[in-house]
Image 1 (cartoon, rainbow over the protein chains, first blue to last red):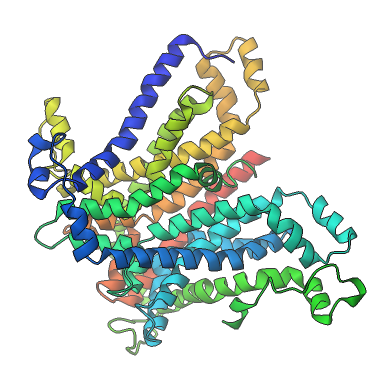
Image 2 (image 1 turned 180 degrees about the horizontal axis):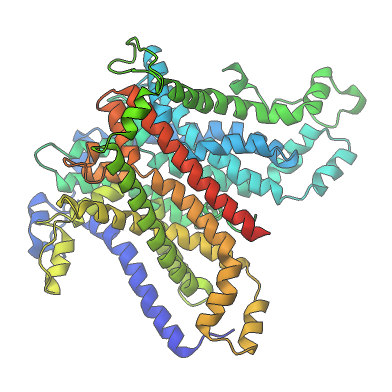
Amino acid sequence: MKPSKPFTVFRAVALAVVVLALIAPLLWMIAASFKTNVDIYDTGKAFVFSPTLDNYDNVLQRANYVQFIGNSLWVAFAATLLSLVLGVPAAYSMSRFNMKKSALVVLMARIIPGVSLLVPWYYVFSNLQMVGGYTVLILSHMFVSLPLIVYIMMGFFDSLPEDLEEAALVDGLTHIGAFRRITLPLSVPGIATAGILSFIFSWNNFMFALVLSGADTKTLPVAIFDFVGYASIDWGGLMAAATVVTLPIMVIALFVQKYIVSGLTAGATKG
Amino acid sequence: MSAVTTPVTRSPQAGAGPAESGWSRWANAHRKWLFAAPAMAFVAVLIIFPVAWTGYLSLTDAEGSVRAESEFIGFQNYLDVLADTDRFWPAVWRTVLFTGVVLAVEVALGMAIALLLWRPFRGERWVRVAILLPLVATPVAVGMMWRLIFDPTIGMANQVLSWVGIGPQPWLSGQSSALPTTMFIDIWQWTPMVVLILLAGLTSLSDEPQEAALIDGASTWQRFRHVTLPLLMPTVIVAILLRGIDALKTFDILYATKGRGGGSFHEVETLNVYAYGLSFDYNDYGVSSTVLIIFFLIIIGVMWALTYRKKGLDR
């Protein structure tokens, strides 16, 4: 069906409004990160100002952000990798052996409020003197990554035909051999989707690190609050910090758009 | 925890046949659980046990230090919480209101945008990129970004309103305008999620029913109302389900914009924010666990109702 002319015009205008509404605030944040606090307070300099790198200097040098970037990277990377190691084989079993009840148990993690896990964890881990360490942060982020990975990979394995594995068995491979040599290589797109989404969710996660991280192990979303004082806010520094957190993930998203969309919409169109 | 580290990939070289070792035979025969057990053990240790403990704590008077002794007090906390019209019920109401409003707006707006994007057009790629950006942005940073834009004195929002002759609004700092403003932020960030899900649903629809309706002389609205919408309904329910769970649990943007306790007058204190505050600001673990169990039951109830509705549609 070919759209009519008036519809095409209406669509162009409507979508332009949508794009502007979604992009303008982000551009505003980035612009403010290049302004001095004096310029941020001067509404006359909303669009015309002389850009400065002072805020970034502040964030990266004085506020110890290089360390926090490293923390965020390490926690997100480790949680994603461990969740893939645990989650991919589990999803395979759950898909091939139709383990509906087991799958439901793992997916329950998606609906449980994080606070209800934090209280017992805090009890246990503070008694073990582990609060503030990387281990407990990584474990807590796996609580988000693992169900996500199992969910995405189950959908992926459901749609992967079993014929090739069966052919490999005829050729003398064991079941596990067929999984390793046939199924896993064919699953690379699914694993990439699950891994990228898990990384993003972990990078963006706030509540677990808020409770479980220490002064040195803070992740970026928690470190942002360093710029919010009781009396006043360092807006320039805050916007630079917010940009440092969001910009890398948005740039990555541009390159792996296809994977992110397929991961976010996984399971949306089938039963 | 030893089960968690079970090396699932350390199977011997394949293609063994008669030379197959005992371990390999065992591993292959038990692969179903060998593959699933580590993940299940992780879930059991880190999720089921904490939830069970939350259930237990809700029946005690645990508070103060995590090492302090606590006493079993039965359902006293539940009676206290359910009678609390000062913090608990307003938090329930805000949670319901927040979730209801953002879901309604996100689904309506998401549907409209998805329909606009349905048929291919030039520049489609760029619109899709724009839709993806709010979704992947860190919610805490998004909260901070809108905090600057909605600042009553230096924010761009009031600046824009002044161009069209509307006076300054208090936005996040107003006692009654704070909650609607946080709803707006949630809608800005998560409508794209609904768009992506509905678009995936629309793309999977076949063209035939549309064309049949067109031949029968159905108007655009009739085609949407009687052909597209019924076929898309299962996907709409999925979108509501996924967004609904997250909207009920919204925490990051509320904490980033209003801080502890949902602001000085608890303007944006939802159940999740309230439970967090009880646990980690007041260390009132017993009551906090009670609120969490009730919150959990609400989420399960909503999920169950929606899944039930979806099953009816699938049939």
